[in-house]
Length: 597
Figure 1 (tube, one colour):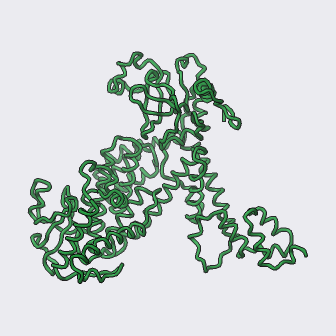
Figure 2: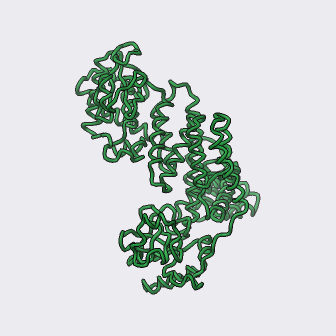
Figure 3: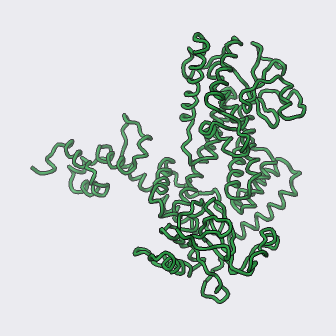
């Protein structure tokens, strides 16, 4: 019997063997009409190939729907190739400047968003120590794509009627935007909220087995009319959250941004007044107690009406301090929290969008307080994006955003758009706007005619004192930190102010010695004197977010510089290989790695 004489179902079964890949199936389908028909696009064979190649994408397809799997396979394959080409090209364009947020080529693909994301995740999940530069830029693009999607969701959320805007959903959107690579969903957060609700119900059942909140099903929307029943819910909520589960205000580390992220509040059981209030208010409303958010200065509160009818009198409310373990306060007692008097307006309930502005404003202030490193700049950028999505005409923050982008040297075209918007909103800002416009135009002109980066060769006489090379794992003799070298200068090039501040003159050779740019294990970038560094006795990977910008691979004893860094320091990798061989008695240049790779 010939193979083609077999029943179609049996042929499909044979062609779905795991050893066959998509090229095999394509070749088989070209042999004759019979096999071509068996391998049709909507059949099991190409469905199997698609699922085998991209298992993460299965959740985007309905089981009972019919799909042209061959077409899906071709589209996904094409998108993957385009994404990889784009990611590979980015390093050459952005190596010498801070990476902006404009990935126009990715957006212009017009490809399904989940195809792009799947390819980027595939790059990120490949061999941990290799393709570091590819992963670095894949992560940047994925960050950007997810944030753009979250911003679209936030705009849709803000267009809803106020009564349909859940504080929890808004808080989750803020959380996701600031942590776009984390696995945070409204569904997962809601599931945790339901678990907490069940715990409160269990406590409530012991106290009052006939309480009406116990009869409420998941998703029910109701309000307890009886104030005594409401009080029982509040007591149960306090007992479960603060006594049983030990939730508390984070007094020791108040300005940690994690306190503002709802998934971290649930994980760490600590937060600041506004994040704890969102959790507390959500739980209370699920159990029939309609608490309202109060934008009290310096200390966010909730209010609980003691009358059956809604009242405008601030004395008809009890105010709940979720940061203070649910303590209940009368109107004027709230002033003790901030130690000064305030007007009645500060006791009013606010909308969900106002609550989100306060939450994002907190993050913005934390970003401002930061140390000027990439992490604090990223938080500042993210919180500004969110704030201006909610309140797009705030001149103060528009100007801050323009100044931030200008300071970082990124996205000059957007800076001009922001400045134009500011000028239209407030012509009195023409002075600040004019200054920034002038210098931004200069930046754009500079980008069109970039200066070639300085090439540093070890062989020139003025570099003879430089002992170490890029890629070496070092230890700081005084501070004890581990780091990797990604650049060097034959002498200190920092300002006299920096030299005085860092007490460089106290070093035995002062500023007249080589200094090294290093990526430190704690995520910082530092400039270290040669006399303070020594090769690490047991080289280890440096967990720094910028490693991939400069290196393509960790090779057990050292990092291998990418093409861009090697172009800047063309003789360093040979020196690194020799140093590694001398220090660790291993072949610094592996079989598949040329000295200039």
